[in-house]
Image (cartoon, rainbow, N blue to C red):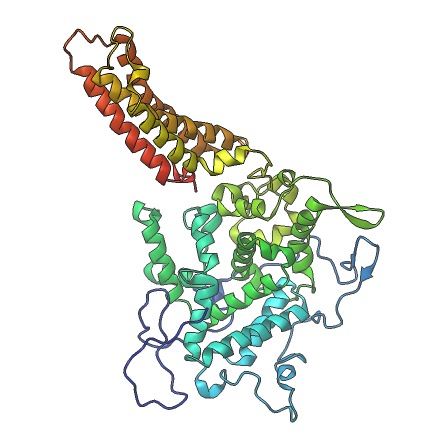
Length: 534
């Protein structure tokens, strides 16, 4: 997870002198260290931020109204450490002192590598303020916030013991959010949020800051729509992000993850939740909000509907007890089906609200506030039917069958010329017929691929976007079958050995080499890679 500072000649440094942090996005060191920005500084002109009300928090209610009843009828009151109903002033009673009061004397520093002497970008108190601010704005549970704060500090302290604090924060943000191997970054580009204005118009504070410097373009050109251009804009956005924004994004991701329960097993869904939360945090509506959101709102409005859907797929309540449903796996919406929905822009675009609108019709900065209005039961469906059938041997091992059966057909046809000799020629078949009959091994390979494709149609619902590549593949196989088997029909029916013509021989030779190429292609290239299977 953590990187090491680049090697170099030893320099006369003190034990706490700061090295220039290495940039994991461009693999070039920064020219100068970056300090953190001021909280809330995410707009070009904050004085222009409009006056927004906070009256729309759908179904949240007060603490007394939002107590939960489980399936057994037990009710659970809110935590005694719920956030105060007013704005927080100064540090809370649950500050970092609680994490430091251990040991014989209670004076031991809990995070020895993250101290002011190390020129840290943000102090523990500032980091705690970020967590408290996010907790008030999103309704995270107080105990979960304290756990994630300590977890983040442990990560920073561990990395800062092996590198400079600035680089520790930079590499941690790269691992979670913006680096090449970060799951969030992979999902962001896989879902094409950089191209879809309706979904991905606002990306992160660094990108907005970059646009404000360079000026927003009037329209999207072809270069802006290319993947290389999108990657460059992403790297520039990550490089222009302040340390405060990096810390705030990591904290928000950890808070979303900390209460995600089973949603942790669907990381693409969690990435979508984080993006909607990040967009909402940087909106004027969230920045102008004064009253804290009640504790537990995130768990009830965002996580509980998803958890309930996943739970009800496998269990039902019988006489007050959860009992396993008598359903096969092909009839259960599982974690993979939930993940599949968020991997594609078409899947995100089909998420419906209970008022018959779509979530993408809502501005990105407001989507987080509509999570409790999403009808998840209509959003998800089976994207792959895990059937117990012998057709699995054909679908998943088609290349094995092609290699064994096709090569056997090539060899047998070449060494058995008497099988396909003409009736009027008792000796040997013609040269053209021998070439063409041997080439039928490619037609056999094509038939195996066609059978595997037809069998695959039974596993993938035709309503899902992935079925389009199966249709294109099947059309390609029909054309290949015509090229690998059609000349044989012509040569067998219309060739006249008494006429001296080179056309049948040329057709047989061309057919043979097409069959060899097709067989090699089907043996090497997985069928799922053909024709844009994403």
